Length: 180
Image (cartoon, rainbow, N blue to C red; front, top):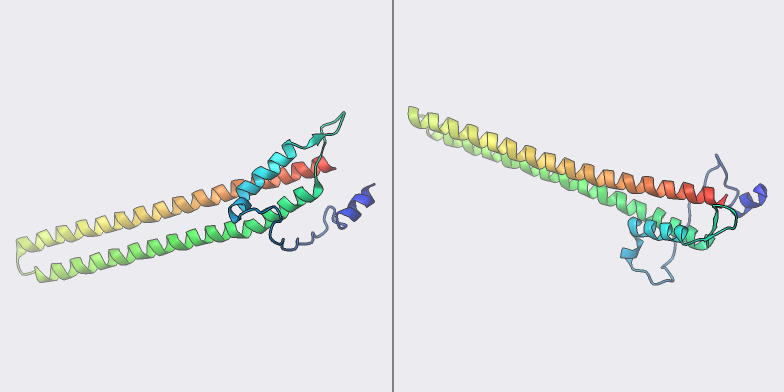
């Protein structure tokens, strides 16, 4: 029985390398690109498992193998897109941080120029030094706020992605157990 299952699954059992699924052509069901997001596909897979017919006298269920495998392949194909989006978010965050640094440096340079122009008068010089310090402090706080927000946003995206991947893995393991 085990050998028959292995033969149907392409000989893939514990410890063996799994063959990467081929790219799936356009969905014959007429789904849009939005219907292929990992979250939507995971919900569909979960609904398929929940709505599967139960086998009498047990907790196992019967599912359409092709439909489940199709959804798993679609999820597998969608993951690189999700990872690419996360990379894009990281890149955007780095650009924002660099832009904030450039702005801060420009503010510092402007403050230095102003300070040099007013150095002749003592009272004006003191005011310029205070203003420059405040500008530097504000620029530093502004760049730190941008950096913290960018890091928080990136962390949230990555945690969300990790949660989706964990849920998907748990569902796949449960489905594998159910099929065994």
